[in-house]
Image 1: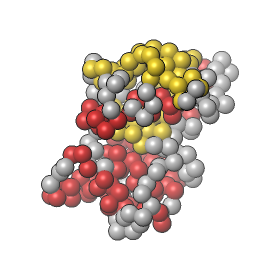
Image 2: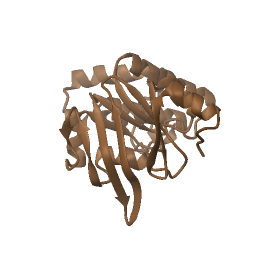
Image 3: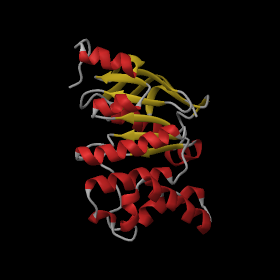
Image 4: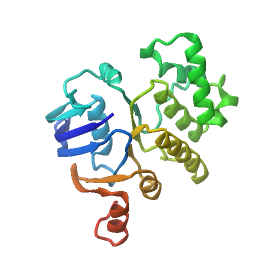
Length: 235
């Protein structure tokens, strides 16, 4: 599944957040979107999902323009978003949170059970908490639930917004190990991430966004060199 953003301009209220942003993610590719706080990274992901309408430009999925497609219908185009700060349903069990990800697929119970088990294989630590309320889990476990919930939609492209935010290093490693498995399985991914080293290790290409504009596009190795030399800075 390929994604192409062309000259995308997005406002939130009266504030222009994105300024003619263009970005591509090829099928099966993992691309990182880096930048300082307030750069517009979350807004870009939200624009792809239809949470924020673009003023100009286009969002293309496999060559189809979905710029004016409603939010709920973008799931049918194979998009799934893991939002910043997880946003799990704290009063529901882990299993029920995961099942909600498959709501639009209307899967039979046998398929649901199989899909749930695939999530527990990806995140083994969730298995023992499957009946527990999500609000009682640690931040890292909630992040795993949020990723698992998105995967239950069987997306062709995963949009990740700061998956390591607030997590301990050991939990961050566990999350990124799972993302590496998804990469090996060929899942197209666009990741916004504050942990630069983890993001660059996972992604093949990187964009750097600042003040709503794309400042850099290149391989993750080129991004690493530019950041280490001081040619580019984040923060």
